[in-house]
Amino acid sequence: MADSPADSPADLQLAVHHHGNVHTVSLPAAATIADLSAALDELLCIPPSHQKLMITPKPGLLKAPFKDPSLPVAPLASRRIVLLGSTYSEIDSLNAAKLSQRARARAPPPKASRHIDRQRAQDEATYTFTTLLPLPHLPNSQRSLDFLARLRADPGIKATMRTHKWTVPVLTEMDPAQHTTHESRTLGLNRNRGEVIELRLRTDAYDGYRDYRGVRNTLCHELAHNVFGDHDRNFWDLCKQIEREVAQGDWRSGGRALSDAEFYEPAGGDDGGEHVDGGAWTGGEFVLGAGSTTTTTTNPGGGTGGASGMSRREVLARAAEERLRRQREVRDEGEGSS
Image 1 (cartoon, one colour):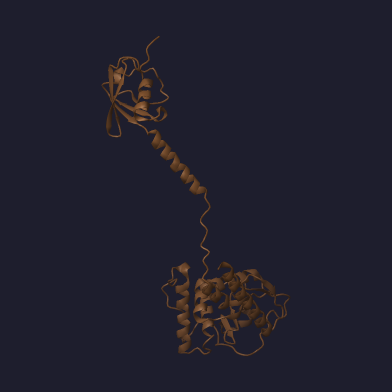
Image 2: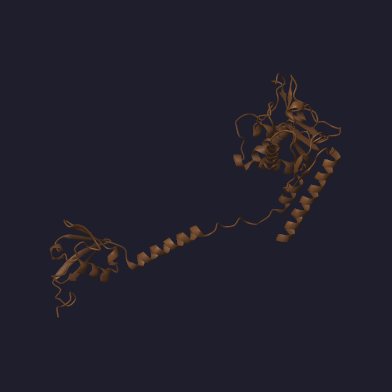
């Protein structure tokens, strides 16, 4: 029976470089490249499938499965042999890292903290625009409702409402045709120190909507009428203060003003026929949706209801009921989480 390479005299010494170290491999004179690969597996724990032998000069790069496994290694004894490859333990560590990475990728994202700032939630339920009313007889009333909802949910507007502790029962849109003359266009109205605020959302031709930031500035102006009726110095100081608070509270703009322009204050001269309002209005019976079929309303809780032909007193009563309901929800939610 022929002797195996392990039983043959070790008369061939090969120097193999790996990770900066030189390892001497003893093989029989008739050993092949496959024998060398097996010996490296036993000596360095590098599986043949992961071995790459860079032999210079020729034959260059050799790796399993070898094109010629019977290639004798005796002629390679005088050449430089560099082994590239990872050990079994390194391979296991790499596979474990891949599995861990895949597991993290499949894992659901962490849930947001359920911490509730009860006082803030209570304030936002109280100091807000209780009811939103688009005009149903105009086209795209849903878009108007979305516009009003965006204003109510604006972080800057919410912040200033909490700061000044303002509750406005009704925020509604203004019909441009009813507030446009040859000389002027009214952009907003505040009735009875914050019972109802009207905003001009639409363009004069009813073919689109005005710029959001411009309408938001008009809302700041009208909120100032909750305190001051006349356009005196006290009013303009408060108006500019509100605009600054809205800009600083709007986290989407980084707490900074959206431009380098000064906060809006109409000049004393020609204003191009456009003005915010003629001062706060008082008195009068404000009928919403008169002459139309249905007025869609929405509240902070997401509910809707009809408001066709409702008087101001009825609207305010509904708004008060909704505000109480919201406060109860916030209180019950806080008690449930404690």
